[in-house]
Image (tube, rainbow, N blue to C red; front, side, top):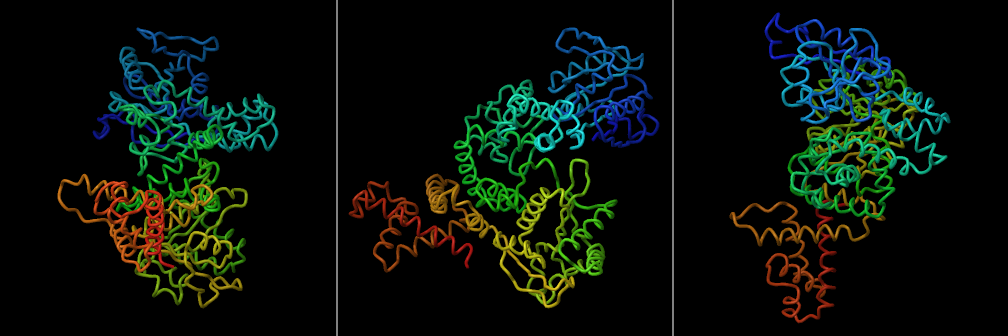
Length: 633
């Protein structure tokens, strides 16, 4: 996919001074030939004004920019020489209007060199390729040019490339299409690995071959960045500077340099690696360093748990919870939420022009769940007539809708669909905010899109503070129960005339109960039975540290700190001698700061062995009490 749009000069706002005319966006789908036609059209568009005609070809690493330039240019400008030289390839001779090409403009230094060369030339036709737009580079924002964006190739085009490279088996070609994410360089590397190994082998080994090639190509951009930093950011699904510093040795300014990499994207919780590179690095890291990866995941999850206790921003809280589930959630939860290759599908809100997709997926939903066609059409009309229709689409790399969910805000004044969805439970569930899930449908051939939709539902519910599910479909009822939503009851009437009422499930997500819910969703095999106790130990240690270092006057204690203190005091006042002894140790050490462990053991007339047994026992009891307080049965 190619998106083409002009980059205006400052004169654009003055009528008659903009040589490019009004902004226009052109989308071309296809491989190299279609891309070449799109660039030629962009050159003709840019050629209408004074000075040089410049087309900026932008695309991710390995998208095929160099291959595209080789089919178009009459010569290449070598910026590594001073003054720059023009190299004419043997196959050149495409006519007088063929452009000069400047490839690999992936740093500010090379962008400045390209600008100086174009200025000296004064006129001509130029195609300048880079991983980031020239408009993002110093000295280019004021220059009139046309930008052509190369997106991922379609799965069909990648399979065609794999066949041309000798990978003809359908299973092998599908594997290449899935792992490559539409990036031809990655597809080429995967095909070579398949030929070298004879059989595809483990996906991690294939991904490792491609990831190694990607890291090599990033060499110019990644100077000054530790080689393990990028794979670690991918393996833990994003990191801020504090987390990354805790996971690996990070030199000064390395995080800033990492931020500038073309494969890095900013997110609410720090930096993430763009797909499909994140999937490649993650699979490769799991294969190369399985134990190390599990250790990193546990440490990252603990770090995010601590951060969750401190953030009051609901969207950030939702993103952190999503990351904790990815790192430490149960295997079933991870299967429900995360596809192996996230680059295949993305979620966007339905908009103008999506009527056909909404109708098609609504019919699919009704057929799949055995719902009456007339009732399905009635619900579609009710949803679309609301202030917020609530339709969200799962789309593939060609923006074709393959799945859909309806997330209607629980606003009694703006959603006529709420009454039939909630029926007699409306008074209980309305006016408290959040969203209600009324339907979900996925094309059978794109079943891997369902985790993306479920993940979108859950993060929307956490960010909104509340999630309600209304469904007659038993598999979705079971999934709701797996995620800890509590069954409210059945609707009085069979809304969809399918022979069964809709069941309603609901859960409220708050700053107080979210940590306990995440603990219940954890993977016991990955984190061990003592993870809750470890989190309580860390929280108590943080309280002790804050109490020792506070110098700016009293501050209100966060809710978890109050719960910890109440649990410790209750334990210390217990009628059980063992419980009371354990509570007294916790109170003296963490809250009174009455001394170190050896001093307290002597003061309480306990042997060191007994003292530490009581300490561990007390932390376990406090973890149990805090868990019940945060999320009562």
